[in-house]
Length: 414
Image 1: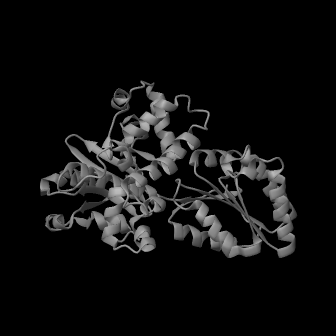
Image 2: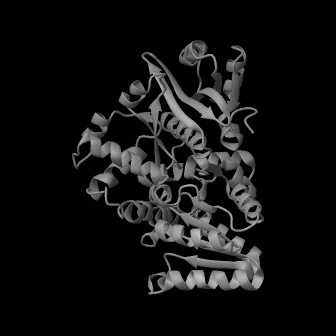
């Protein structure tokens, strides 16, 4: 099977798609998933503009998509364009909203391949679960998977012409949804945008449309508890106790998984060499954009001078979310009284990361040093404020500021 997956920024995703669409057609279907409001539709429209008359754009959530014969008209038009222009590119937005989309796309793709019709296909979806399930069931060997991630501080700085440090601080205070960022000077409008354009569609449309969600009120409560517990290790039993609508532990675990598929929350497991120990450990809840923390917490973003503990939790959450959104495997480690905030593996390499936003002493890094002693393939890294760099330097451990981590990850990772 030729399935693969890349976690990309907007510009990386655009450039990769342009490169793949220059390959001989028909090529493998490009499936693009990602959170709501990160630019998937904008990207397709940008591609359509650059492709000119060879582009065939259609949105599955448009009124015409519900009209009889939509599917047949779409592919009839694509074949006409391919015949006239020797090439066509079908750009299908929110493909998963169409009934039996994957099976129908398989049939079309097989016909296109059999006839050697020069048609490329790019399809998008905001629900990883729905897009992935359909593709695995019907499109095995026929597609490549791309994920357009939550925006990073670097992307925010580039697009909105911000100083890098200001972009990193904005990611902690209000996340990096580009549409919401334009409203950051008007707190009520900003919060309404995040709720109405991101949270509610992701939960109320993408997830509640799935058959496994039998208790929507409980799903919403699980999300609320997660967004109120940034970068905290929370047992399912404790999570159950915080919910007004009590649910079975299996149901809560299932809903945590669904929130991950909707790009809202990641459940980091405890690092362990034995898989059984990983599965039995409580998860560390990482909300994948601090905008979601801000819209759930009635206090809004924390002031580092007035509420340093809450600010530290938001910084840690933003750093771990950045790692998740960059396609890294994220876990944590804890053996009382020792703990490591993040155990990262992936394209960045293998890192054990401790996040310290306030003053700290050498003994506060005992957990980090013990973990890397036991697991020497992991490099220790302290993510701290600029004032903490001197403390870390005396220990001979790699360090970076949390602003720099949010901009470019660990030292030398990119």
